[in-house]
Amino acid sequence: AKISANDYRVIKLLGGGSTSRVFQCVARDSVCQHHDIPEVHYAMKIMQITENFDDMDAINNKEPREVKIMSCLKAPCVVSFYQAWITDDDPYFSDNLSCSTENDQSCSTEDDLSSSSEDKYVIILMEHCLRTLRDDLPFGPREINTEESWMLFEEITRAVQCIHHEGIVHRDLKPGNIFFGSNGLVKIADFGHACWATNKIDELKGTPDRGSPMYSGPELKEGQHVTEKADIFSIGVIFFELFYPFKTGHEQRDVLTNLRKDIHPADWKWSGDSVLLKKLTALIPSNRPSTDEILKYIAQRRSSN
Ligand code: ATP
Ligand code: MG
Ligand code: MG
Image (cartoon, rainbow, N blue to C red):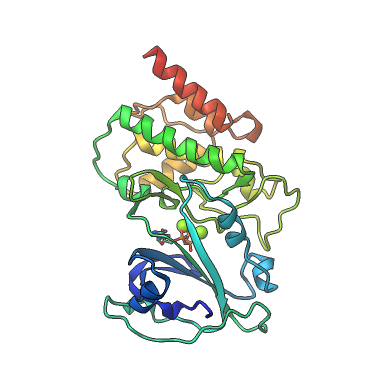
């Protein structure tokens, strides 16, 4: 039988961007019994593929790059991928904001990769995570435990090392894309902007302005060839934020924008490591350390403490 969104019951909307919605859902009883699977919760990401979608493969009815990359990244540090399919019908996308626990609407789906130029939807079924790093870094006063921040940064670096060793550059690392799994471990998600480090040409369509402006390396904006060092800039910004509570979104924007210009305000009350921060956020990508080098630095710091 064909898989369809209708095999799943939507619990609630988890979030979404301009072209996607992510729902918490659970397989319907009949599906669980038939396949003898437990009633676990999933995250279902529904992406609308329009002419403006930046992945040419998806527009040309080929497997979307996000799906290709997720399905080859099977590691504990990446949000687990279960299934993906394409449908012509909008199962939950447009009326999602009112989705409730009782949502029981049915819909028909087709997994027809060769369908026409009409809009279509890619559905990705993945592991449901409970929170993101964004939830741990709220605006306002926040107590900073220096050693905990270092441990978290080390874990994030390990997760990024794991995807870099698989030859993937994420290009959109930011607190909202770093999740914690049910075991509390860091899990990287949202491979919508990811690419293979070996690709000399960018197979993505449109402008080179990808990722979140506050977290992405300056080379992403300039349309230069991107290497895994783009992700190092992003985790450098995250490194800073782990040790620095922003009072407001406005302050966050100001300070992080300055960081991108290599301006480090002198009056930072900052318990992090300014030498490492400077290296991570170096404007020239090749001056940034690799994940291996960062981990070595952290280990040295620990043994000298
Ligand atoms: P953006 O590019 O703006 O970051 P997006 O459209 O690429 O967003 P995702 O980042 O994949 O979409 O997901 C959007 C939001 O949905 C996340 O920020 C998160 O709140 C929620 N979400 C996504 N995946 C999961 C998951 N596996 N478990 C729990 N929540 C999730
Ligand atoms: Mg995201
Ligand atoms: Mg995204």
